[in-house]
Length: 275
Figure 1: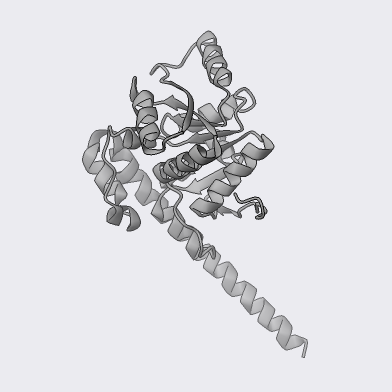
Figure 2: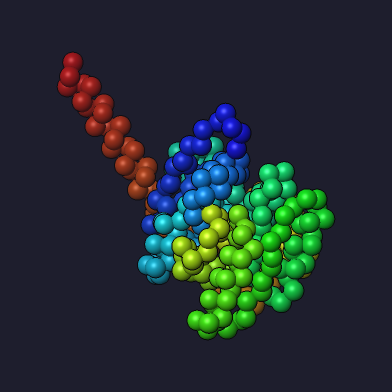
């Protein structure tokens, strides 16, 4: 964020109960820089249709999203929804893209990073890859948690290790909804001003998994590529959850169009009777 440009809080739009940020990547960077400058403690949910639909039957997850500093539209279906609801300038703020852009900015500004999550060794590979791409990137540490829930003593040790590194940004790669629960439960305990849940970005940027081609990302077809790569793990998400989102979102758009119609009709009637 340049010193002469004031930060403006982006609009939050209710999409099936989840308040999604109508935002662009530069706006997300501005928000995060403002939190670091003010030492505010916030977390960011990078959310697609999967996160919205999981929140339909999980009130706690929905509340976690709505208490986040930002809920960025991770997939094109959410971007298209926001544009159809009147926020035409909204762009996709995709986890790997945010990580790249913020890493580049951090190398210039001196923001310190910590990477928490991924399989054993993935966070180390991620840190090494980003250090090569962005020389001067300040990395405070990495930590891959156990697959099982940690004990209270282990969790206290994790918090102590992260805080001892004094990071400005803690990247959390635990997948949805585990990473959202982790950030919310550690808000106030983790002293870093920013926590960002980026899920599979750890694997993508560490070179462990391939990303979809850009043309598929831009046209909302990334799900097809990812399903072909991990059919067993992602079958439920893409074959059931995303279609369910599209059906529910269609109903929201119909209600929005009806509300807009009646608003214009009432305004027209008022002008007519005021003559």
